[in-house]
Image (cartoon, rainbow, N blue to C red; front, side, top):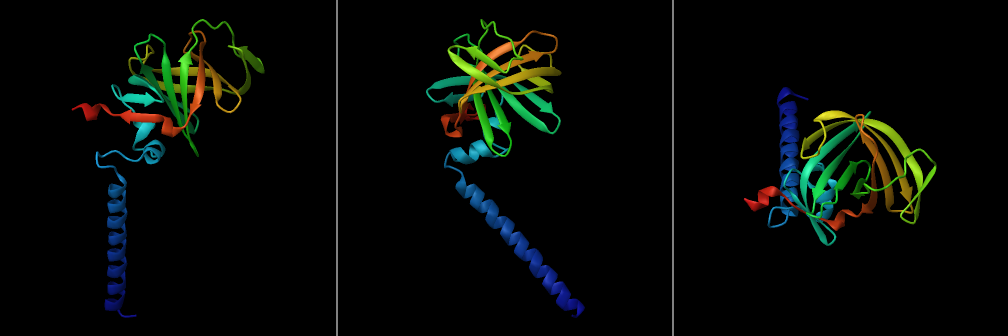
Length: 201
């Protein structure tokens, strides 16, 4: 094959690659809604949008209740990482949304149980008329931003329990503090509607 023929083949390959990129970008833009948001399944499942990218002041509607993000804690344990967004609904009760972006996006809405007297470690724990079974234990490093009530960085220990398919129970201790107890419910990504702070400006 002559040099000119090789040049033409290479140029054609580059041109095809450019056209493919343009088509893919056009389809992604077309998938967006007229108001600029992405469809619910896409918003929840991509790293650039949805629960993973919630920021201070964003409003989140979960089923029939609305919350405002007041702070975020990002946690890392080895190769695994997850995010917890603290949510305020003016009730005075502490809520948080945990987001784990593994093979499947896992969302859990947690509600604090400050009066709980149970402690972790047993294979099963009874709380609120439900029996929870131990699932996992570990320790992670964290960084905190905005109104979390935590130092900006540190370590966190945890014990997680499950009951049935969707009920969760967690014990968390940040630094040298005692255990924080919370009950959680596994969510479907379709249960969330996110209104970024930017929509208000």
